[in-house]
Length: 168
Image 1: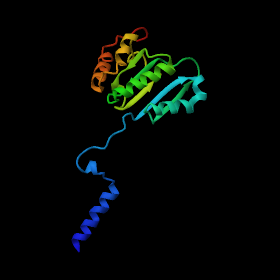
Image 2 (image 1 turned 90 degrees about the vertical axis):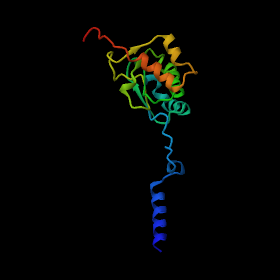
Image 3 (image 1 turned 135 degrees about the vertical axis):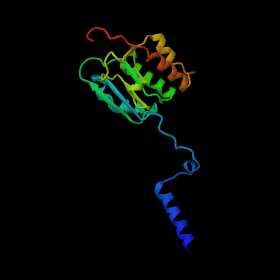
């Protein structure tokens, strides 16, 4: 009788904690590939928010948040966390090129959570902005880059010492 209660108790614990068969054998459940995407777009895109959300969801970004600049064009920058898969990083670059007229600045991985993407953020100043040219952007868009190779290149591009100019 006592063994039955132990078995029932064990089954109850398993059901309550929602342990999957895979995690019971030591495998981790898959984490979302990108935890959050924050995008700042020009004001004229405001009326197309639902359409934009749908396009980002189709690209694999289910947790996307938009802000719209009241005036002018947002900065042409992009920031990626260190665990963003290369295919999702390339999708983010593609969407930034489409809706923000380009990517000319990279923000370093160290500023962001591991699976975070930001497009056109105005939260950063020139002390952490790494300008890139079209050839460098093309290197980042190379579909043959693995996630490790992509982030190695991204880190290389965003780890040089920046000498402040002007007001510093």
